[in-house]
Length: 399
Ligand SMILES: Cc1cc2nc3c(=O)[nH]c(=O)nc-3n(C[C@H](O)[C@H](O)[C@H](O)COP(=O)(O)OP(=O)(O)OC[C@H]3O[C@@H](n4cnc5c(N)ncnc54)[C@H](O)[C@@H]3O)c2cc1C
Image (cartoon, rainbow, N blue to C red; front, side, top):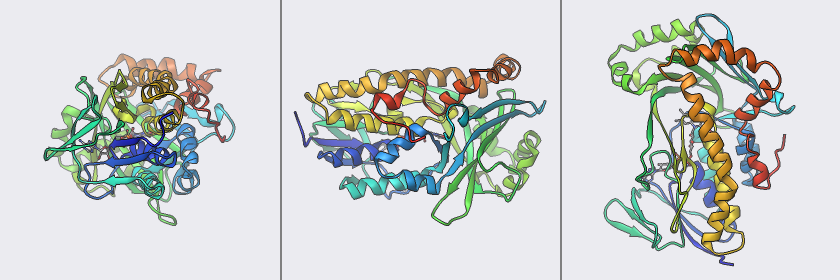
């Protein structure tokens, strides 16, 4: 059995840092490279599901994530024209006590970053990666530097990883988002709420916890936007956009008061791609670099954490590096295929120009989803449980 491998990780995001900490603790020599000059990423609030929380527990980070995050018990969506509830997912429909934990991405980043440093991972900033020689295990960076050779190179460069020439499908819609102080009242403190007008307009408000212990509670506001309309939105006076946003959801007025210029909102464009093969020579893909998609099902960071745990577990298994990478693929492939497919099917129901899909959503799927086993299936989908990913990794849910 090969122990003490020399491993180069491309990308110090959630997945890259988590796998770095786990591999270093298992006795491998790990270096992580990222383009950032200083660690201090931006990012919206995101929901940690039980699947991601279990991996954070293995890293010793679950209590801190729960302390800094906000409990999410329900996803609740209303069609603004009719006032009808068209999405109502309650975690407890699957299991009593089950919940999501919404957290600011920079907070989650800081937790895994510190865990990686404490585990002895070497993190090299200012390294913009351009390419990899997968056969030789070498990483090429901007400025003509070649790093390696490594026994294993992990591509954790996220949704826009340059380490693949496979086409990615740019999704037509993305989102503008802002993190704002939680208003004193008007929003549920334990629910991700959304308002829709067909599938062309959607706004979301999600409690997203605190930036630091004892700090003020925050919410993340999302506004769905066609990527091709982003430039026109930038040219529109911000007050005109606010008028549109308030027409969709008048109760967001106290929140939107905190948005006074276009720069208060960040645009995120979504892409969809599942990278097969996941193993190429000495390189393996992980997280969004393996399976990018829209965040409609809220699984991306959770899937990256599951990949990280699976890869670290596989690398402690029997056989040579190739056999261990095959074990990683076996542990994760079914769950990845299932969620990529579900995300591909569901995204246009909430973000597209279709008239038929949102009509079916509001008048057919919504009523059916309230009848057994609809609530259980929805809760399983949102919590990431479909495909039993924890069981495949030998992990047990805490709740
Ligand atoms: C608006 C929005 C909402 C979301 N909501 C959710 C949610 O509710 N739940 C959820 O689970 N997920 C959510 N996600 C998705 C989640 O953020 C990602 O799936 C997750 O961060 C992926 O982790 P990763 O480690 O694969 O990649 P990232 O975290 O994206 O990390 C990639 C790293 O690679 C570095 N990098 C990139 N290119 C280069 C290069 N060429 N050279 C060097 N370094 C490079 C970057 O600096 C970064 O540090 C959301 C995403 C968005 C945009």
